Image (cartoon, rainbow, N blue to C red; front, side, top):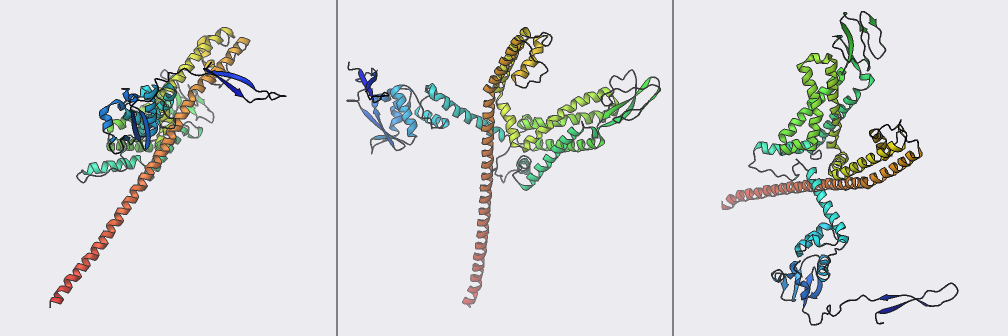
Length: 518
């Protein structure tokens, strides 16, 4: 009966005010005698100005350094008869509670890396953290590790702004960091900013050339006579034109083709417009020189060659270089239909030139970095999509019209488009079961994408905010360095003025001394 507590609630019914017993609670069964503190030695700790008292036998747990007598003696204060630690009192309280209860719970308002430092000081392994607190703790530390990698990659192959020159360095060692900073940091000087704008202009012009080559105003054709047996594909606005002993009047999109001999045909071959050729040659020359200069002045050449930006630069240069070398070595290839077709395929790689804008756009660089750093999330998304595609394409094959879905691989396209909620309408179910499968497929696709895309968005926002913060820090460091330089120059100027004044005073004293002696 002693273990029963009657709890009364002053609640009223609708028409009267009767009091009634709502429920009864049992006291938890605890061994209070073992918890008694009477007769036990106590220890006093002063951690960060906060006093803690605990039983000495509480410290006997060997999971922490508080059980080591040598460790405690280094922090013992004879005057106050207590152990003083200049540490975080909140983390010490968490450690002390771990010794009392055997469960390590962390304050939610303490940053994970800061908690990690405190746990290492007290000798508590992070594996002792309870699951309820582990999520926040691990998220903080994972974020810090990710930002460290981001900052390392952001400054890859870039020397620090406060690089100091050694008087004993050679001219080359003095010149290399200056040129490298000039090429990579547009905010380092006015000249570097101008060079950045020029480089951006060449990128825009090269992209314009790549796009204009496919438009009608820049189409350019040349007539070439070939053996009819060797002609396989001739292109006149995507059509083959052959004539024998006759003259053919072409449309406005092509010029007139004149007949050749009996065993030969005249074909029109599409070639690059002369104006675009000049633009591409100038851009190629600029990009090639820039790449070579970057390679020469790079402090770590292997890291530079394997970096993302260097690979993009090289892939953007290679198509034009191969085309130039081939046409220079064998000019007759310009008239070979098959050769022109293969070279056109090589030109497709030139689309990578747009990624050179990464040097001038922090957002684009962060987007690419986010995709590269989120490979695990992307692979999870791909795995979910492949699984869904296989399942729903199999179901739609067996429950819908076989004339539309004539095989399971044919249904892959429909399943992919449905799961991504695009729905082109070229393939769709017609039966009742097919519509049911289609509905489930669409809902499953929304869920699968919804599980993975938010993590990508969170990574992008995290990296973008950190990059903006790092750029502001760089600006602050640059401004601080500029002010220090101005203060140093002002001090040197004042010292020089004072020195000149002292020299004039000394000279006058020397002039007065002979007069007084005489």
